[in-house]
Structures are given as C-alpha cells and as structure tokens.
Image 1 (cartoon, rainbow, N blue to C red):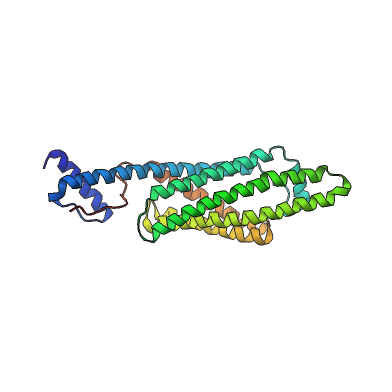
Image 2 (image 1 turned 90 degrees about the vertical axis):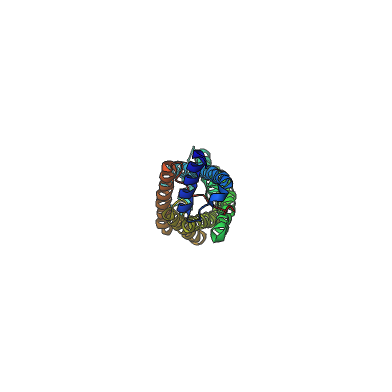
Length: 281
C-alpha cells in the first residue's frame, strides 16, 4: 500500500464512518480508492448545488419582499371602490409586479437546484423531493398567471373604470371586480401549491437530515402558513383574517432562507456526507 493510497483509504474510512456505512475492504483498496474519489467528487458537486440553491432562495425571498414594499396598500384590499382607485393612481404598477414575478422565479429556481443538492435516491424522501420539484414547477406557472391577471389585466380594468364616462362606470367596475375575483382564485391555488412545495421539500430535508433537520421543519411550517393563506383567500379574498398567516409565512421563510444560506456558506470541503455508498467487493 503506497502512502498516497493509505491517505486516501484513511479519508474513505472517516467519511464512511460518518455516513454509518461499512468500511472498504483492504484487498479492494485500488477500486475502493477510485470509488471514494468519485463519491468525494459527488459531494463537492452537491455542496456547490446547495450553495447555489441557498443563494437563489434568499435572493428570491429578498427581491419579492422589496418589490412588495412598493405595492400600493393604503386602502383595504377588499374595499374595491377605494382600492381600485388607488391602483389606478399607481405609476409603477407594472414594474412592481414584474419585480415580484422575478423574485418568485428566482425562488423556484432555488427549489429546483435544492432538489439536485439533496440528491436523494431511495426511500420516501426521494419521492417527497420529486413531488416537491413537480409542485414547484406548477407553482411558477400559477404565479405567472397570477401576475398576468393582477399586474396587467386588473390594472387595465381599473384604469378603464376611472376614465370611463358615468354611463359606463357600472359596467367597467363590474369588469374590474370580475378580474379581481379571478385574481383571488389564482392566488388561492398558487398559495396552495407553494405551501405544498415547501412542505414536501421540508419533510424531505428533515427526514434525510440534509443539510439540516431544523431548516426542514421551519420550511414545512412556512408551507402550512401558505396553505392557510390559500384557504382564506379562496373564501374571503384579501381580508384581514389573512394578516396573521401572511406575516407568519414571511417570518418563517426569512428564518429558514437565512439559516440555509449560513449553513451552505459555512460548509467546508470534507464535511459533506455522500448520499450513497456502495460496498466494494
């Protein structure tokens, strides 16, 4: 056994003990060293994926929150006469909603990369992460429809209502209100799917302990808050009863996205746990 082989073999033993697996046989050392190098390469790739995912998730959350700060919200959202007039007076409506869309687009991209970072190949966690990926893609599609309805159609409708002649105002208002109800519908199911995505990924992270059970639990709880949002919006629209689940969801997302980012940035080479070790014979 050469010195370099011995060093690699020692690293393999340490890594496999961490993973709770059996140690490579001495007589299979050359093949074992090769497999060890392959696994270490896979772990480094997963670490890079995790960092990219954490950065994208945090950036998406941050951009969405910043864009939301500029959204007109002086009037009560369910007081349609007052709020439609407020929306009509907004000169940055399109840019605000485009910013929100880009934020969710980046966040969903982070979930997609997280799927590859987790790299789960067996058990219930594998199916949870796969269904989480599918749910995230559906979420993005729904949010695109939502922003088309809210960011484009509703704005055109309220502008037309404000500038309409008196004889046309009733019809124009009814048209704007119909679009508003359509916004409720899409927003409700978008919230359901985003919540489901967070729950599925959260359970997958918690059950596999990759990279942190605690982050997985908090992500799952943020998903539950989104499910509550979807239910309230579907029944009452943007009522005050949605304030608590909305604030709770924002708080939990900020916590787990920052926590995940810290874990990913502090992770050093050699601290990864490879996702699969096959016994070399």
